[in-house]
Image (cartoon, rainbow over all chains, first blue to last red; front, top):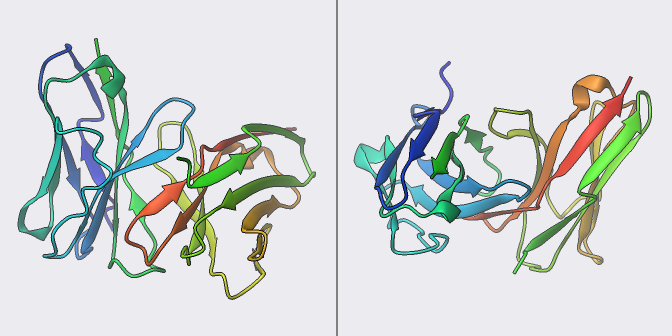
Length: 115
Length: 111
């Protein structure tokens, strides 16, 4: 079956512009996670959606970052007024539920470059 | 504050050798410890995971050793192969609500 998909695969933008990154989770997966992966760094947690519960936004680095999940499926991560330090690979993952032992399936990521 | 510390940053192993990657954590509330494998241009993929009620889990050539009292866990890759060359991440989670990842280990297996 189809895995997690993300679009675009690459995004180059100018400093100060807004960008939207899209994640299509695996059908039926109720939990969705966004991470940021910078060069030489691990995966930095950004935000977590579980079903209809309020999202855990504790990882968002600033108020320029926001995310929404429509209809419990597709999610969009928005970065406003992009800065050069926002350049990274943004990864999305989904899992069947938010329980402890459910495997996260990752998408291929969106590589964001801010010039 | 790095919740999960991973070492080494890079590792070079001869084909057939044993690759060992170590991780340490602080939060005793963590109850799930997965390892992920990532190839260039791909997202991470779950390799093997362990819960703190067991000290070791083995799947094929991959073994996790878990030391609850020391708050450490490690990945052992037996009979390492060139196809194992990838970046490996350890992680820890509390009830699956938020995952904390290590900084990754770049493994190169030399033929």
